[in-house]
Length: 268
Image 1 (cartoon, rainbow, N blue to C red):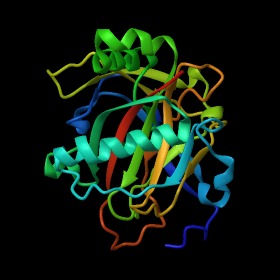
Image 2 (cartoon, rainbow, N blue to C red):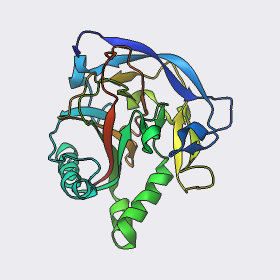
Image 3 (cartoon, rainbow, N blue to C red):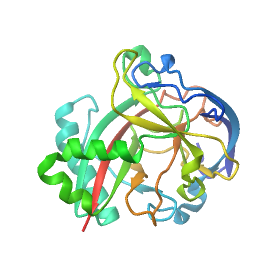
Image 4 (cartoon, helix red, strand yellow):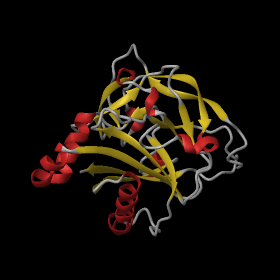
C-alpha cells in the first residue's frame, strides 16, 4: 500500500449514544457489552502527510521508529523482560520521564474471539477515567512508592505496534486538542457478565469538531504512542481511539495482530 496516496478515508465509527444509558463494557466477551453506540461517518486523515504536526505535547500522539528484540508475543518472559525494558527506555527518551512503569501488556487479534483472545476495540473510547488510572497506579506502585510519585507530574501513555504490517483494522486516534471532557460518557468495565472490576472507561460521543488521524500501513518497526491521562491540565489530557475497517485494505491482507502496553511516566 502506498502510505501517501490518499489524504483521508471516510468510514463509520461507533460512538457512545448520547441519549442512552452508558451500559457496561465486557472486555473478554465484547458481544455481550450493553453500551449503546451509534455510527457516524467520520473523516480520518492520513497523518503520514504531516507527521511534524503531531507530538505527545501538542496533539497527544506521535509515531516513532522503534525495533524490538521481542520475537514471540505469547512468551511472557520476553514480554516482561525484553519488551518491558524496551518500552521503558523508549518512553523515557521520548518524554524525559525520570521513571517509567509499564503495565497491562496485551495482544489483540482481529479474529480474537475465535482464538479465545482479545479483539481490536472497534469503538471510540479512552481506556479509563483519571480516577481509574489513579487506582491502577496505586496498585502497581504500592504504598511505599505510589504517594511520592503521584504528587509530581505524571501521565499514562499507550505504546501500540503491529506484529507484522498493519494492513487491516488500523488504529485511528483523535487529536487531543479537539476533544473536551464533556464529549465523554463514563462506563463501567467488567471482564464478562458476573465478573466485575472496579475499572471505569470513557466512551466518546460524536462531535463534528473532533479531528481523527491514522498512519496507514504501519510497519513492525513503527510504534504509535498516545496519551490517555495527564496530571498537568496544560498538556493533552486524553486521546480517544478506535480500530476501523480501512476501505483501502487489500482483499488478501492478513488479519491484524497488534501488541500494546500502557505505561506510567513520572517527571521530577
